[in-house]
Length: 243
Image (cartoon, rainbow, N blue to C red; front, side, top):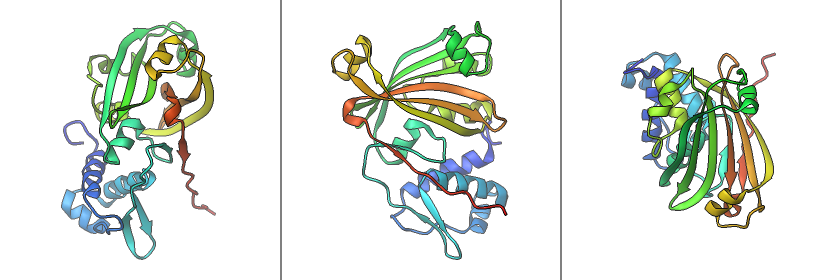
């Protein structure tokens, strides 16, 4: 690790910045060249590249190399094989992302604790935010995490930056799986005020349960989308047959 950040995360983040400056369709350096550039092993480089492929930033062509994909013009959220969160996804597309933190506090909620695999009386961190993209409110999100596992979240300023990047970098936790349930929810008066709609208006809601590489639940969150941004894109990648 470098300054507490796993090597592959440092390589991935630096590569992501370089890719953003490349033209669509441009070819990336080979794995060997990247190993020399970053002074890391091929496994580390491959790990970083696989993450960026799952993010939809690059594509590998057998026998030809790895290339930058064309950036989508839509402002919709994309659910694909890589857990990178709303902030990172929009930021990587060159959009201006601002966050208004409504609350970052300790709560006790038995139903949420159960989703996190905790006792009913466990202390939970409740991180509540509004996410703006290019000046437009695009998401209300409330995320719950175990206080005992991630206490530094309470002291961090999440008005800028990614919660998932913070967890991966500060705690060296690899986020491995995200189970998403998309549904319709009727907003209460407070959320209706943020969205400038009538109380009880149905909006798109997403329940997200994030797991680490050991199968333990890291976070549970609920995201609500204003009516103008109620479009979600799902990208399904096939898994190579191991037979």
